[in-house]
Image 1 (spheres, rainbow, N blue to C red):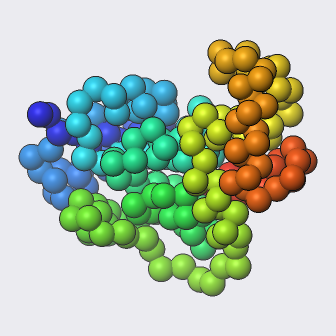
Image 2: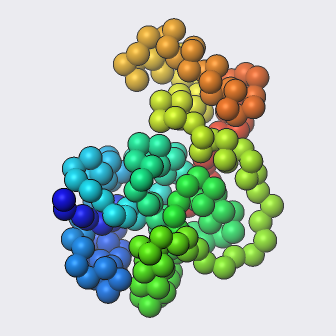
Image 3: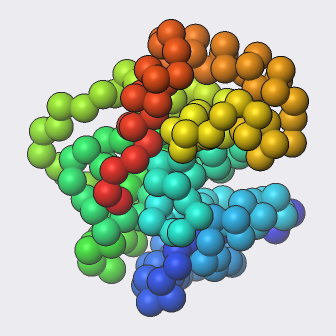
Length: 206
C-alpha cells in the first residue's frame, strides 16, 4: 500500500518550504501537493495518507469548517494546520477541532522539521502561545458533529433555508429537519439562531 503526505496550500512557495521540511522529517514518503481543499479531499480517497498539512485560508476551506469536515471524513488521518496566524485563540481552536498539530507559516525550517517529526511519531505539536480565554466547550461540541450535520450548520450560518440546504446536499427537506434535531442536541441549543451563534466558533482570521 502506497503511503503519502498531502500538502494542501494555495501558495506554491509555502508548499515548497513544507516539501523541504518533509524531505528531512520523512525522506522516504512521497509528497502530493494540492492547491484547494477539494483536491486534498480527493487525494485522501486515493490510497493511504500518513499526514495532511492543511492551510485553512484556501478559497474553498471555509475556515475551521474545512478542518472539521476532513476530520469527520477521515478520522484516522492526522491533520496539521498551517497558518499565517499564530495567536493563542487560533492555535487552541485548531487543536480543539481535532488537529494533530499547528505549524505557523513564520516557523523556521528547523522548527518545521522538529514539528513534523514529532507529529509523525504520533505526538501533538503546537507553538507556545499566551493565555487565551476561549469557548473550548462549544468547539468540542461542533467537532462532534457528523460531516452531514456540519454541512447543515454551515448552511444555517450562511442564512440558507431548509429547502435550500436540502437542495445543496441532494436530500429531502424532511431529512434536513431530522438532522437539525441532532445538530441542536449536540450543540446544546434550542433553535436556529442559537446554532448560528455557536457556529461563529468556526470563523475568525486564520
